Image 1: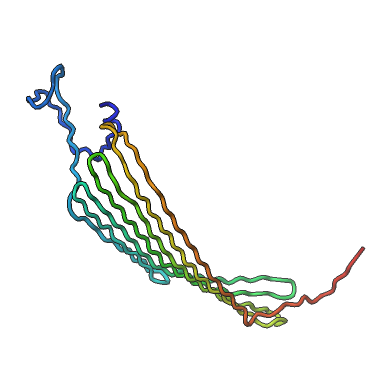
Image 2: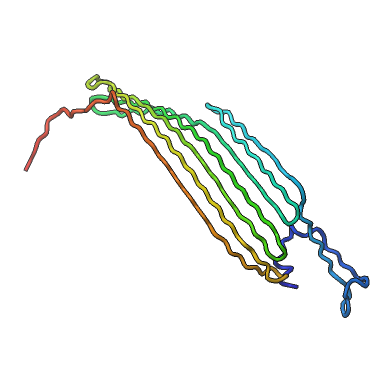
Length: 225
């Protein structure tokens, strides 16, 4: 009994009664009272909630999701979904100062993120045996665009422009079925489970240097031995 009380989660307890004068339905022989622990009953029916977050920066960002569940005592199922979309721009100007000229680069980057996350869990209790599964499906897509321009203050080289596009597709699938046996009333149990994981990450990059030019070093090289 002591071990059972130590392993019993407090959130599962509805109330505790101390019965000093127990009725005939309690076996209180040799005891001065009875400690009656009343557990919370499992919720029955549907439950759900939705949420959304909106963020306004240079570009609009949104996140929305839902949690849905159903329980009928021995059977329960829960589904969660979250979706987010965001754009992140960045501008950067860099100056490189040399003895005879200055090189200036202007870069602009825009990344877009689309993320979808889903979780589905279910279980069924049959006497002392519970069977169920956990599953996950995560998908994300990242599109990036980068362009830049390079200029020289002395006009010795023409301006150079370049661009790069990136497309990243990520997908994660998992499923974990399990069987759980309750061995006794003090919390001992035996669990058998199987984990399946499938992961794919497809990255595609395209670099365009259509107006880039080759640089040629101008100067005198002196070799000494």
